[in-house]
Structures are given as structure tokens and as C-alpha cells.
Length: 125
Image 1: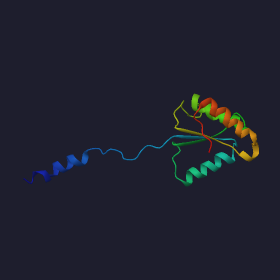
Image 2 (image 1 turned 135 degrees about the horizontal axis):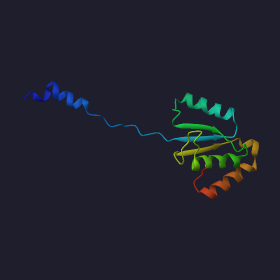
Image 3 (image 1 turned 30 degrees about the vertical axis):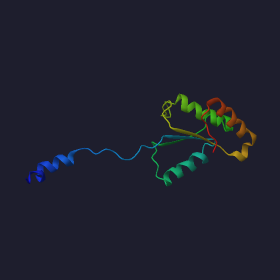
Image 4 (image 1 turned 60 degrees about the vertical axis):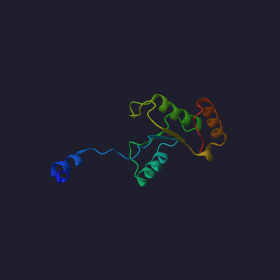
């Protein structure tokens, strides 16, 4: 009768593990053309929004600062990964190539056209 409210019965209910309710975050890779200001700016944004470092990876382009080089480096990191930078192959949900449009002019359009036609999945923002 009052058996359901016994201490042992209450403890059994509390010990059951609860399911997580929060959806996991996307892992994001941001490749910037600059080696200092770009990554520093994104680090500050990441800190301001309290994003975990495991979810957002920020890297400067190692292939150069031209838009096509930044885009190709981003694609190479996504497709091949890099053991030294602890980036696994195709383990990211989103990859962004960030560069100054004002400094490069028409190169931006050609980089977008070449890579979007080749991959079919890139998007201009």
C-alpha cells in the first residue's frame, strides 16, 4: 500500500541515467587568408560567444593569401585532414574560407566559380 514510497523504490528511480536533450554542435573549420589578424579576430568571436574549441577550429592558410589558394587549402584540409593540426579527414560539418574581397577583386569570383563547379557543395556568403 505505502510500499511505492519506500526509500529503496525512490533510489531505483533516481539512479536511472537520463538521456541528453541537447543536440550536438557542428564541427566548424575556418581558414583565413591572414596568419595573425584573421585567426585572432575569430578567436575573440569564439570567446565572446563561448564556443568550445572542440567545435570551432581556426587556421591560417598555408598555401598563400590569394582566394583560390585559401579555398583549395580549406578543401584539402577537409578532404585529407592533417595529423599535425589534429584535423581528421572529413570529420567536419562546415568549412569556411575567409578572405578580404576588397583586396582581390575578380579573383574572388573565379575562386568561387572554380571550386563550386568542382565540388557542387560550396556556397557564397
